[in-house]
Length: 337
Image (cartoon, rainbow, N blue to C red; front, side):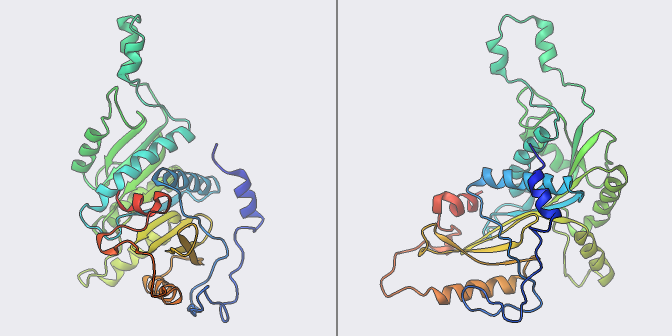
């Protein structure tokens, strides 16, 4: 059961929050000099084995962080490898459906509706008993998911078969619009999905309510930073400050040559595809904070230069098709979500 008590003890004793090594002489494994402005980490975040494993890790780390006292959290989950076929919200929904099922179980909320199979197997039960099985339970422990608009919320309710005996998410889950709907007194968890730059005021309102009501809130795949010159400096600073108030509990971003992973309270670890390694990938470097994209690309360039193949090399995957090498199906499976 969550939270991971041993993890909390390690954090409080300082075992998982070591001071960064002196950066003046610190290099990554490929002798690439790292900027002294970027703090390194010795706490490596591991790659997940599969999509389900990544969801389980995200849920665990987030609930651990909440139990530690940090109740405003953030999850970044991008396995598109740059594929813009689907919107961020569309790509996020499979994650959210699995995540809310895990969280509802760990927070002791209500289970799914009974399936039709359950009713068929109990063909001798009375009509009153059938009605009782299909009737939504009265729960005082709810979870609210805030969508960008009511249309998106309605589509999710339809796709997840909510309020039916075939529901794919627990009855405790409620969908809401970020622009109009408040938190409920019965909420034990709240989730904000893919907020846009124009929604920063609505997000701030929900976060303020969550603080006042002591309700944990998870912001998933926020898109609040927009450097368009049409937005004033003050507005951009508000967005940055809002994001700074969130603790990133899990991050998984796949790219054509590897991935960036963060599992709270560990570092942001950069992994690269490497056919010279038995596992098929190698750890390049870990950072205390989310590294800039320029630093990540320089790491990959240094890795590529250090591992130049001999004239005869194994034929590798074609990055142009957006599929990363599938060592135990990991990169390939995640990049196809």
